[in-house]
Image 1: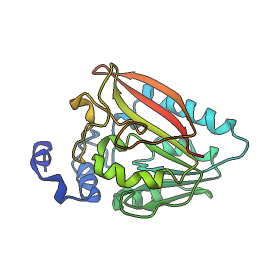
Image 2: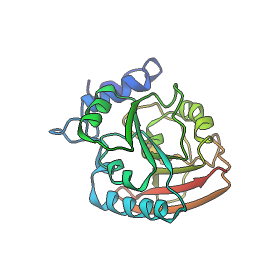
Image 3: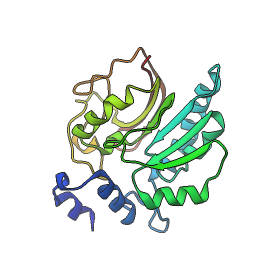
Length: 223
């Protein structure tokens, strides 16, 4: 199925698993010669290296290591570099074949993978949820369903692709391969309709990107 076909298809009839399985099957995030390629946000060094530096610096600053749940771990090119800074690390994605591939490629005493629909299913317990460029692909309805689960983690490390200039946050879109930049919008959890009210909030990193946009990583402490 091509991009235009996906755009025309009524997304309400498709589950997140069906949508994301199609995205990887058709290489809609690039990497035509690489199965299960999670896109430039997971592979461009100008994006990945500063992110790893910022997140590992924060993790290393804590008094004790955390149980980290990586929600939407993708091809694990990023997450694999964070495992050693955690007490336990759980990589979670909705695509069965992707998780099977990760389980084969990545091993570690404190590393595990689970195939879960983060919208519909119960999430593992942990101290910190990493949600890196995941929410930007989801509809507002699905993000709203996820919000109570995110509030159960003490820390959230959320990365989103946002416009540079002032913008209207959280304009709705169907769940698909695309993000809200086309609508000159982006996901901001502290704004309506999500209204996250963290105890503390800190920008860990902002990286300028093409199309007058930025990839921003925010640390939220819920309690």
